[in-house]
Image (cartoon, rainbow, N blue to C red; front, side, top):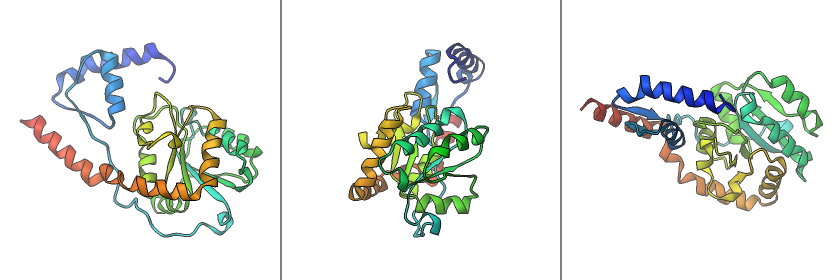
Length: 246
């Protein structure tokens, strides 16, 4: 319910009273949403934190950028065009960047704010690409992009960000207290102040100006990708079922 705490509280308590307190296992995709729920209802649940995982098709592949983007720094964000995803923050950051003429934004998705976002993006030097990509095309975009930015203010489990990491991308993530995606930040270079376009622009500029550091971060992120492979996550799911049936 976004900014309606009372509605959220009533919803959480209703779900706990009628469902969760009666079951043997509750699957939460992130520790963030488990903590949020249990703090709201003031009870521990029979919870298991297991990511839904990323399919094996999401992996690094060698692919060239499309010719029209060849000399541009491509920044990708994948998410529904809705208010809580905060696409506008990335648009404003690209406009504020010292390298705004070199930046190409790609917004993968669909949603009700598409036209408003297009209007807001008219100030950019390079016209952003707004498009919903089939899986095979999305894999290509994830691999030819230079950077992944996740400005969403509210996120239970950022599968889109996980897919980007699995393809070798380095993220810059909003430090929103209502987003589970924050856990994917290695340090402050991967975070920007929530809804602060200037801070995001500064973080983008740093990676544009330091390609060697960007490459270093790509290598560092390779070490955490295996933790959310779909195969590993489904093994944990199977273990949860066995334990619940005992």
